[in-house]
Image (cartoon, rainbow, N blue to C red; front, side, top):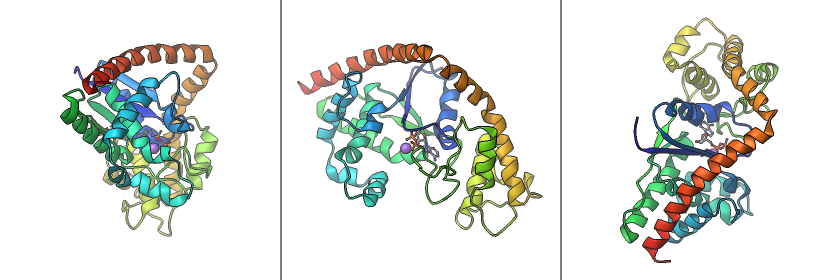
Amino acid sequence: PNEDRVFSGIQPTGVPHIGNYLGAIQNWVKLQDQYKDIIYCVVDLHSITVPQDPKVPQHAELGWILMCLCTMSRLKLLPQWKEKSKTSQHVGVGLFNYPVLQAADILLYKSAVVPVGDDQVKHLELARDLARLFNNKYGEIFPEPQHMLGSSHRIKSLRDPAVKMSKSDLSKLGHVDITDTPENIREKFKKSKSDFTSNITYDPVERPAISNLVDIYAGITGLSTEQVCEDCKNHDTLNFKLALADIVIETFKPVREEVNRLLEDKGHIDKVLYKGYEKASEIAEQTLQETKKAIGV
Ligand code: ADP
Ligand code: NA
């Protein structure tokens, strides 16, 4: 038990996949037993990238305050910006700025611990930098939030191990969602990319596709990657994929059933969300007022 607050979020842009689970959600569940004070949210402003939403004005407002402290050169260093801005000529300002909004999401709740996947490490560094900048300029308000990584490395697309598994991946076979049917899961693993070697070894550089499957297997079973390769040394890649599919099916069966059960009662979901919103906005409003007082606005 610890008095520190835990905070994390997820984008509402699709169904959570096993990468989200192994990178973050697995830890969210674990931390529920270790910390009293926990806020997990759906980061809707990030997905729609509009500047305002009547329900979450504090996030946009602190986001703006932090943007005024942040330099453009600092944001240009972020790997996600470098990557995403390469692919399109019409890149919105929101895509450039969103790590600052994300820092505001975290700092508004003065969270100490932020369970996230490793693609978020650089963004947490930015959040700490901004907390420090603010504190130095206006007085000590924000604790520096520490990231807490999940059990696995970054999980990659089943179709292309060069990119991470993502909700926004348009290829239907690249991501395994936690609500996929058993048939669906089996098909995705069966068709997952592998290479010309048939045994199971862990070598992310030379054999990225197979190593990604070993990572998923290890993350879900809690075994080390060495142990997975040892246990599966008599499997060829197809047998290994089918064994992995079975484990994933078994693990997420209760999750899928529970999600489907909850979706039957949208009224209940709205009530839970509203209760959470009331609790969170009280904290957020208090921090925002402190912040504005410190700045003198
Ligand atoms: P996505 O990029 O799939 O839309 P989010 O941005 O909503 O996912 O991320 C939610 C959480 O899941 C974050 O903590 C993020 O670091 C983690 N995460 C996302 N993709 C992966 C992945 N492929 N492997 C491990 N963790 C991931
Ligand atoms: Na992400």
